[in-house]
Length: 557
Image (spheres, rainbow, N blue to C red):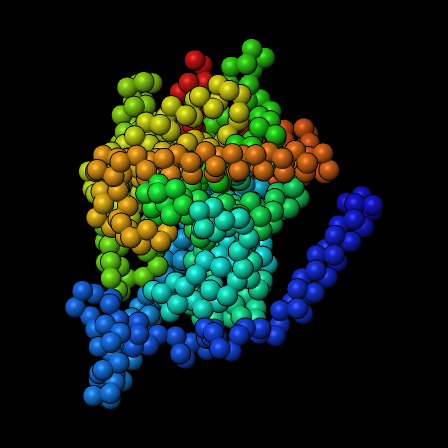
């Protein structure tokens, strides 16, 4: 490293550590009102008799519990234990689903590395590996507080008292707060030290990391690793949390129902917008700023196929992702015990059906259009179906789920070549899968939500109901607004960030490094050292790998 740059990096590192130390010192002592809700860091008081009140149609009411405590003390103690067990069941469910979503990082890594060229495999794996700790630290530092600082109680996991103690900032319209962002104690310190809040943080953190991972596919094979590392902190502290607050943290998009009578407001059950669209549109911005890989386009502008080096790896990675989605969508119910929580069976099943619809429709479309059922497009079709069902999974029936997935499978087959013809190089189809199909998933809520579930969402008592099930245009308009805001925010701030970063430090690897492969120049190791050309210090592959890859079928068209 150049001495001047090394000194600059040291100063930046010291500044960051000093800032963290200052925040830590400021928040090390709990600061909460003793007469209000009390955080429970030991887990000893979370879950009580009150947590069984009204949990089913035949459950005791709060008045029943009060009368029972006076008449039969033993029954009151049993109710107390039952309440704690209910919260324990829900918390274990949330944690296990969070662990499953965390494992999706392995699936993303395998899909992206498999779809890319062999000479960059270690680099692609490293970006997928390091985005997990980088994003985690950013979300822990302040992202979680910005997104959920004043989100309110999550009753299914014990009430999360700290999330009722924060502040939100924004104007009022029609007497309703239009929150733009929230704030609470950062670093999970002070009043945030609570078992339910920690469980909620873990679950939301792995969702955030999914968003952060998406651009690593669109920007693969030419992204400078130092620039990537800074991006990982920015998206997890600012870009993702701000939009996430607007939809999931009680922000202004969530309030569209209360403020303007647009259905239940922004309805995104598990994150087609919050997770996938944000990642997809940031990925699009990054791919545009980076420019295409060397050799991707000919002099006349026609694309060349840069084949996947390991299609089996990509397909196995897709199965890992599909498995993780059973934590992603059903886990978003935030519980398994209590009124309506058994809806998780419907959520899991429609998730599975949509993935099948996406894979089959992509296969049939590609087979009919290009005479071969390209495996890479079947992979993207399954992922497209999963992305699309993520928003409506809590509110649609089985036939609609298959239809939503099938439409997504066709959409991704249309979007991938369209993006390529626009001279935007997206090696894994990240924008087409997550951006385009994420938008379709958000829109589908306003069309296909069947009105059987969702009462109370965003403070609106009625169930979530789409246009085709008698809900009128209100919910559909809320979904359209959510799509437009998400695309504008994510692409806009992503583009500005990457442009500024490119001016300041450069975000693209050198031409020489890109041609030789980024493994040795950027990582210092090769993913496949056995392929090194004798006498070469850079590990250039001895032969060009052959394999299917998105775009291969239309590279000559």
